[in-house]
Figure 1: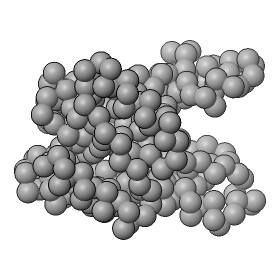
Figure 2: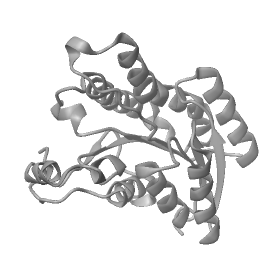
Figure 3: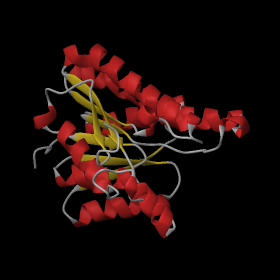
Figure 4: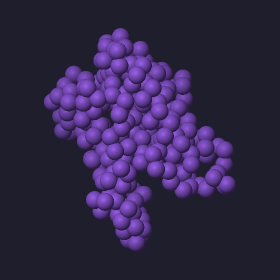
Length: 247
């Protein structure tokens, strides 16, 4: 239980990669606050699964792109828990489309959630982390932030921006024993990839040197490493979890 006594906030923690991260951090002993916007039932399911295994978890609904809502929610968390040790900026959305047809509101929605949301949450936790002289901020980026992807200009730009944010904050906060890193997943088994036709799935696998799609647990494992004591001398870095598709 190497995270015993630590408090973690995972944004977008009710499903997929976020769910796996919540379960892993709770298993390591952290009390996990599960953020979500919609999908109360899914968030409750994560909380109940953690509780059933002897862990601690609580729900913290707010929109990460809303500065007032995120600030108030995190202030409430700190008042209740007394600390915030780990922030995982996982919340993200997609609004795919070719550039020539992409609506401005689709660009803004993705940038606001995937990049601005991480900025707002990091800002909200930073004062407490600096005060306690300890913190771990982990941003969930994406392979497309490095390699690009047709039809995802908004998503790729936001995720690339998240890498820049990671490096800047790592330099700003290092003197207070706060590390800031990113994890960049490749093709991960999700509800979306599970629904792909067999040939489409095979094509994806041909792009991956390890020839298999990753799992949410693979990503959670990288987050767990960065959140734990073994990752304490790593900051400003990105761990690529993609089976070798981006080198």
